[in-house]
Amino acid sequence: MLYNEFLQGTGCKDTPYNFDVYKALEALYMANDAMTKEAVYKAGKSLVDNSETPKERETRQKLTKEAETLKQDIECFDTYITMYKGFIETMGDIDGAEAVKEWKREIKWRQEEKRKLKSRLCSIKSLFKEYF
Image (cartoon, rainbow, N blue to C red):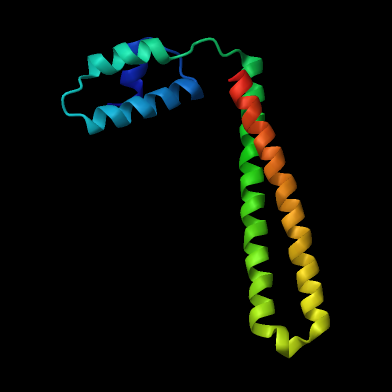
């Protein structure tokens, strides 16, 4: 089933929320041979939301973009933390105690920054639940 078929069958607007409803129902439809498109449309009509305002859409898009950026930043911090831990394991004896101390400081700082990013991400998820 195509998204444009879903839009026509349910009469809903093309919004990100409705697209998410479509993806969920499409997965059910694809997994269940007995389910008809009409059954998907009927279920979709009760689930879709056509009330998103332009201001809501703008806010959601900003939050989504910020959430994606935070997720990428968290992944980068994870990579650096792993890298510095690897330095300590493999090169600690060669580079000496000062290098190891610096790497441990770097790990600690990045872990703290990562916690802050995760906290902000949780706040954004909370806003999504409250408003969208």
